[in-house]
Image 1 (cartoon, helix red, strand yellow):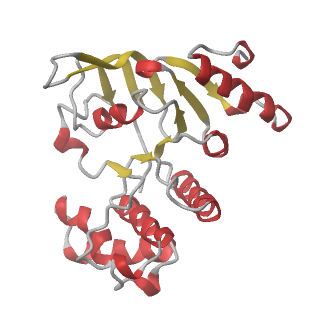
Image 2: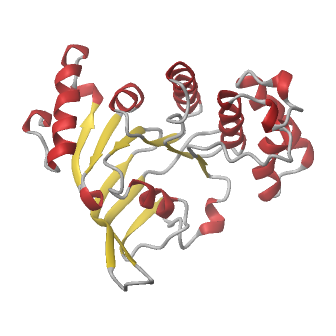
Image 3: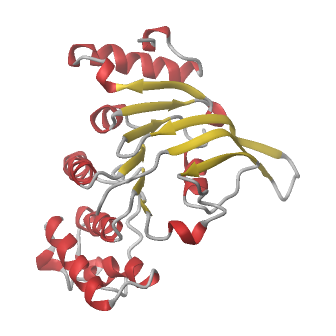
Length: 260
């Protein structure tokens, strides 16, 4: 893995959905502009329904914007879908393992889909299961694994494609806090080691503050309320930062204390 080489440029992004039953227009993202540098770890926080997951759908090419753009290098994930196969990986809240495939075969699945040779598939799957501490469970099926172990398989599956960009959508929220914290640290450590750009959606401020180089705070329709660089905040200021983000989320307007 060589790490991410291009920034993610989001410019005046707008996404409108139309309800099929009522014909009503739903504004999911409104004029979002954001730049994420190669190798950055960015945590996105916001209330439920604020457009965070819609942004991920656009980033992985499942949706087209109504207006504006997302560019990575010179390409867009929704118009150049095949170009980004194997370059963007997502870890979801649920592990989404195929129950009829063993752990190692689940890790190999995305490599099969992008046409990687069988010998390379095997090598990478074994390597990542070892890195995640699951080498003894390579032939186990999801039903034989704990929730934390299944999520480790999901992380191994994501890293096995050697992605430049990692997207984590509430990836640790379904786990107990001890397991979640362990996997969170593992995820961050691996992302930094392999210099991947990582974007994490979370509802938990503690998680955002522990993970991100930056914390991006979304308001209604993914309005950018705050873009916080953690290097601007000393450890002694963490209580103030937490309070200011909470106030920002509750009022849908940036707390003045976030200005640095």
